[in-house]
Every structure is written in C-alpha cells, then in structure tokens.
Image 1 (cartoon, rainbow, N blue to C red):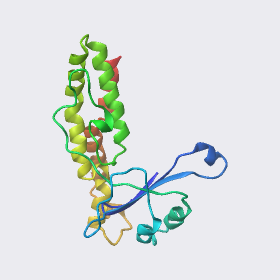
Image 2: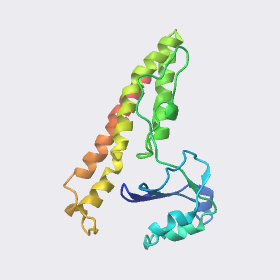
Image 3: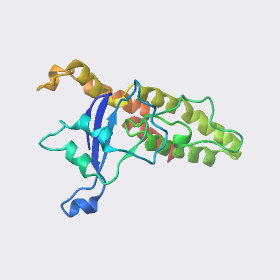
Image 4: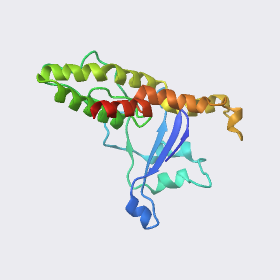
Length: 217
C-alpha cells in the first residue's frame, strides 16, 4: 500500500486481488483525494456517483515515479466514482431500548487510519461481550454503548486532525519542496510516537488488544 501527498491532495493505492498477482498482474484499488471548495458546488453524498476523470486527473499529471505512474493508473481505470469526505459529530447515545447502532451507523468518520471497518469490528466484539454477560438485552446494549461511545468519539475527533496521516501533513508543512533525509524533517522517534499515540486512541496497540483478548478468554 502507498499513500502520497497531504491533506489537500493525496493518492492512495493498494492491490486487492492475489489471483491477479499470481498471474503477474495487479488489480489495484486507488483513491485520488482533492480538497475542493470556493465557488464549486458541494459534492452530493452519493457513494455510487460516477466521476469524470478530467475533473481531477490534471492535478495528478506530474505524479510519475519510477515505481508508480499515477496518471497511467487513473487513465487505465474502467470506472471511477466520486464521493465526499464526510463524517458526523459524535452523538450522546446509540441505544434506545432493544435497538442500538454499530459501525458507521453509530460513528461515521473520515476514512483515515483504516478505521471505519476496524472500529465496527471492535464494536461487534464489545456488543457480543455485553450480550454474553447480561441477561437483560436492554442492559446489555447500555453496557455496550458505555464501552464504545467515548473511544469511538475520540477516533472521530482525531481523524478530523488527520489521524495517523498527520505525518504526511507535517512533512508537507516542514519540507514543501521535498527532502533527501527524513531526519532533517522529523525529530528522533517522532514518527514512532505519532503512530503509537494513534494506535492507543484507536485501540490497536498490542497491550490493549492482548488485555482485551485475555479478558474475553
């Protein structure tokens, strides 16, 4: 997987088909992200909206590297979709009687840090744990909500501030003309500290996960 750019313009690409790779090819999923605004109309919140490549491809025309040709990747795509980067403010509750929310329905967030699906998985684990340990389903849903409401709200807020992709934004701000030595851009251990801090907020650091696994066992 590669991520290049910063908050205003970013490109993400990763292979999604092992069978194609085994045949010597690579089926690629990619995202070309651009900040828009000014006099442009807001992008409709429709995740099945077909996009015109000419609206964004020129901005990536010079993104040619010896290991990835971004313009060629865009040009070779049969179908491209356009959707907005949106989230929602955290809400004070998810559960109403015997009904609750989970995943994106409970805490839609900016898709940074691979956290949309990941937080849904953690929700499911907490919900299963609550239902397994409470006889009353209403009480179980309250217990689930109490366990997940505040942690997911922190992720939503952190993702608004770039999440783990903060390192890309800092590199852009500190070295807009590029750099040859990353040590000239980041202090010793700064990258690791940013990554570790986000893992703790998202619940991904090994200590948290091992503790949760032991408690579930």
